Amino acid sequence: MSESAGLRARKKERTRDAIGDAAVSLFLERGFDRVSVNDIAAAAEISKPTLFRYFPTKEDLVLHRFADHQGEAARVIRDRMSGIKPVTSLHRHFRAGLDRYEPVTGLNDHPEVVAFHRLVFTTPSLAGRLTRYQLEDEEALADALGEGIQARLRAAQVLAVQRVLARTNWQKITDGRTAHDVHPEAVADADQVFNQLQ
Image (cartoon, one colour):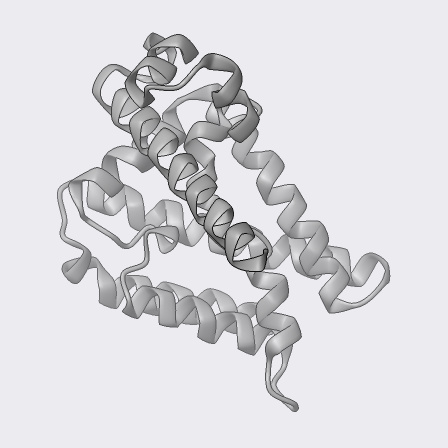
């Protein structure tokens, strides 16, 4: 029975990935507002009701790619080693992401990643939905940091810093620079700003 359930779960995940990939390809090709849900369902060879079982909104078809990072800052805090300050742990995590050229840091010059970020940052409905994801992350991080206004303020500060650093890195890359070229500046900026948060 559990093997069957595992197989169903993997099949659902593959279907979800296929739908999301089809949607993002269409959005990058035509623009978010020029692609209908019917277009996506047809490209993924599924019905519209099936699509909505996997993705409640059109925006979720794009932003599901951020789901891997949902609650990440809170996890970093909860999983940190004893004696390590929360901001130090988050700083190290962000720096490691820069060193791996993770798209979430903005320091990735793969053309599809740059185009994906442009799609998200320049489409008002996607930017608005992304803000909702960020507010949920802020609440989770505040809970991990403790209680009260100080935890909420610290969570807001840290996530604002990460957002600004990522957008700055992305902007430098869209201006024509390589991720490798921007890396030293990205590291210096992260070090400076996180040290100010300490």
